[in-house]
Amino acid sequence: MNAALDRRTVAATLLQDRGDLLVVTGLGSASYDAFAAGDHDGNYYLWAAMGSAATVGFGLAMTRRERPVLVLTGDGEMLMGLGALASIGQKLPPNLTIAVLDNGHYGETGMQASHTGRGIELSRFAAAANFPWTGVVTDMDGVAALRERIHARSGTTFASIKIAADELPRVLPPRDGVHVKNRFRAALGLATI
Image (cartoon, rainbow, N blue to C red; front, side):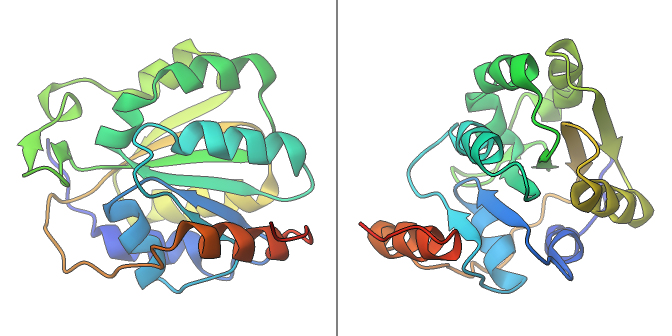
């Protein structure tokens, strides 16, 4: 895989001037990257929910159609949740973007090569699942264009963003699931439970 983008720069660019953007992060590095870009009450960090980021983002997009929803996840986590793409492709919420930080490795378990590192292109799964826009992003101009799509809510979007397979220092977001849930609910104007 020929990837050169810095994951933290990508995350910071996507979350820059976020406005009313809601963010669901896949476990591991995607959560660290979103947190490093700046903690926010509108970030829902998943812990121990491998493969669930797309489904959580899908449900959120279906119930909060007035707000853009970004699922920021990694290739390993997305590989575990491929079935979600078929469900999303049946409803196509126009405010949902799935951005996969694809380094071709399972970063949380020892940097073994993932399927994407061996030639599988995740955006093709999304295209087969009826997503109206899919793409492979390999430069920062593409990241900036993706950011514009997110805020325009111009249709269900899937982007595989090719990043370098660097092991960066972990910047850990809150790990208390009840705190994260209640903070996110409050940001949505819902009662905490």
